[in-house]
Each structure stands twice: as structure tokens, then as C-alpha cells.
Length: 359
Image (cartoon, rainbow, N blue to C red):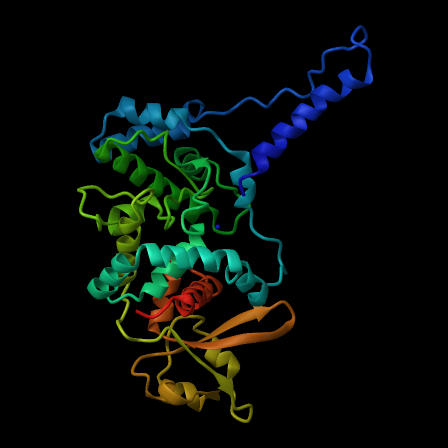
């Protein structure tokens, strides 16, 4: 939320090897060494990685030889490093285009099937955690198209690459490096505790796993056994996936019954747009303060009991989209810190709900 780079490289290498042979007679063909694959770099060759492994083992009371062996077998993935490079400055955001990637027929049909197959489990999660079934369905649909795209990178390769070779050109390189070191630590601790081979799980290029794309720390903190089989499985138990997403939102402060956002327009005669946008997506204004600065609300929004934020979604040069985000909208952004992501999740879930027959 990507995985064709290695396949394309392999195809290109094959073409480089075969083309000269086809162009010459067998007698004149000469070996072509230019297409040899670049040697794989493993992190047993990195002093920094091995020092981290030793320190991790001491802090987590793990077998140092085991930790060094696991990290030592991790491979540096150049394509992941490229994917983490910052976007070019001035790249326009486009909410309409972003939305169209997710609110589309294939995802809607898959969401409808998922809801039908898990109707009772979704209802139980909504009852126990107060999180709407539509929001749970929206998250899983945006993240992995209901389990169809959970990622092809070995998690240990992704996390090790980003822990020890995060691109220095990134404006937050230092903080991100520490984040991925922490996630690698959580992943290895979780693997040892559950008896899982750390070389087996596959996920996104950032190390997120399973249908809900939980990072290892989120798996440790928020993943739950919702099917009652005595283990947590976000790869193959749809009940555990549903319960874990609901638990995640509840843990971040989801308020049952509160809308995520309201429509908003503006009174241009008193609009203080810069002031309204200054807190970004953090709800900071009471209804009275919000409207006094030129935001226009109506209906239930005028009775909203909490704080509001003016959420801006750009449309690549066209008129931007605005919504009045509530504290629950902010909670959705804790899953992925993007207002575009949050609104796509919300609208996908609502669109799938509209397709469900009443019972």
C-alpha cells in the first residue's frame, strides 16, 4: 500500500543473455557475462547489524546466536530502499484520483462477499468494541483487497533493509531508522515467543503483515484471538483480523456513535481559512469557534459535542475537497497518518454497506 521490480529485472536479464545467441550462429556465440545478477548482500556482513543483534538479544533475553543468525540471513533489498525515497517536491495530491483507486467495482464486490461471509463476526466486533462493521470492512479492503494483496517481501528482509539502510536523503531518516529497528526487534521477539520461523512471513515493503497489514508492534499490542482457537493469526483467520482491527480503533479512542466527519461549506465574509487549517487534522475547534471562523455547518453537525478539524483534500489543481473531521476521523488516521487514507476507508466501508441486503 509494488512487487514487480524483481520479476522485471529477471526478465531483463534473461533477454540480455538470449539475444546474442539468437543473432549469431552457434559456432560464433560467445558467453555474455554482462547479465550476471548482482551479488546478494546479507546482513551478516554488516558490523552495525550484528552489533544490533547482540544488543537486542541481551535486552530481550534471547539467544544471541539465534538472533545473529536470523538477522544475518536477511537480505538487503535495493527496491525497498528506492520505494522509501521521498516523493519529488511539488508532486500534486489528488483526492479524486486516490478515491477512485479504492471505491471501484472489484473492491466493492469483494467487500460485499467479505461482509456476507463474516456477518456474525462483524456484528460481534461492533457490539463488543463499538466500532462500525463498515469501518472494519473499509480498512481491510483498502489495505489488502480482503486478503488478496498482503505483500510478497520477506518481512525480515524488509525490516532489516529499512533498519540498517534507510535512505539518508529522506528528511526523517534518523527517526525512521530507529522506528524500523524497533519493529525488527518486535518481530524477532514475537517470532521467538510464538515459535514462528522469522524467515517465513511475507508482507509489504515496509514490513506490515497479514490482512490488516499490522506492523510487528501493532501485532503485539492490538492483535487478538477473536475466533477462540488459542492463537492470533492475521494471515488465515478472518475472525482474528476483524477483532484485531476493531480492538486497534478502540485502543486509539474510538467513540461509539460519533460520526467521523460532517459536510462543511464557508461564509467567505468571515472566513479565516489559514486559522482553521493550522491544526491540520487534529480536532481543535468547538462548533462555536469553528463557525465563528467562517465554517458553515448544518443539521446534526451543529450539535456535535466534541472538537472539530477542517480537513483539506487537494484535487491536483481543481477545487479542493473539505470536510469537518471529528475526533473519530482523527482516530482513523492513527491507522495510517493520512486524511486521504482515512476518508477512502470510511467511504469504501459505507459504499459496501449500501450494497448489503437488509436482514
